[in-house]
Image 1: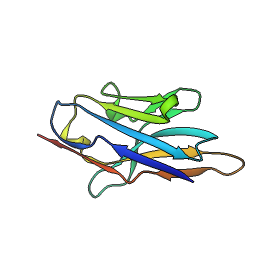
Image 2: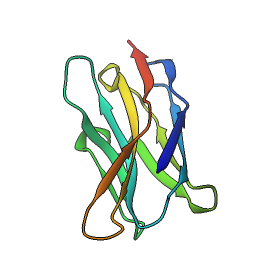
Image 3: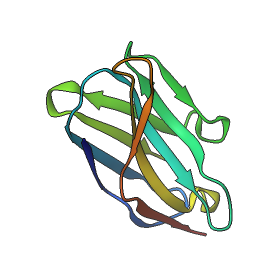
Image 4: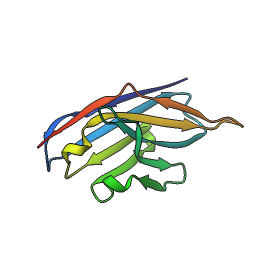
Length: 119
């Protein structure tokens, strides 16, 4: 199994910055991608950013230029640096790890960390 432990959420004023961290442990092999999703109040969960096994990255259009995802392979950690935060970034942020050890794909999720941006 895979365990994901998130940290770094909190309350910040608009224009401020936060950094989220997600540490993975357990069966962390055959990883396809690691990333962050978020779920604003009353809305569906959506992709924020992810980093693929080849090091390439994907970002939601709404966060491009403001958020940066990175990975520390030695520590099995993925980081999300969030700058110029806006009230619409308020959500529960979930770390995701996707594995594909064979034919099937498996998604694992962290417990979620609240990010609140005040105007």
